Image (cartoon, rainbow, N blue to C red; front, side, top):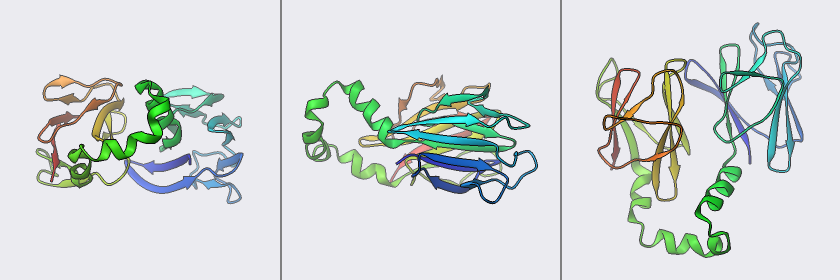
Length: 215
């Protein structure tokens, strides 16, 4: 089921499941997603769901609606898109659409139903990957471990460099989400295409060094 994860300054303040054809967003209390901030219009935007597709439509708001840094009037949202309204960032998550996309990439649609039992038996890493974390190696938070308990964990500084670590059936992948400076994995720049993570991999993001660890 699609959902929106609302955050400000990197702190998640609410998660909203999209269950209706129309989900309204704005400052007024009658909206489905209420963001009480003067930068947000009373009726700012609406999310329209058709089947498994969700469109974000701006309702002529004062400050506009941005998707991945670009002002939009109406746009089809993709899994992991970031909607920006004022200082708020709203991450769009649609695991069903992403899973469908993954299956088409594998090109084995007919064998999908039989895949999970076969995949879990030999892939010991899938069991281990449930206890993965990002360990901060430098900066004020050095020594801190951030457990990767969500399907998607975003790390970094909004506006500078943000990466997303996604939990998949056979482990974890990392991709660059936003920001002018690209994160690096073991010294190599990471782009928008997801890269598989291995135990002990070194990440650097916005000048902070981190290590991916699996317990």
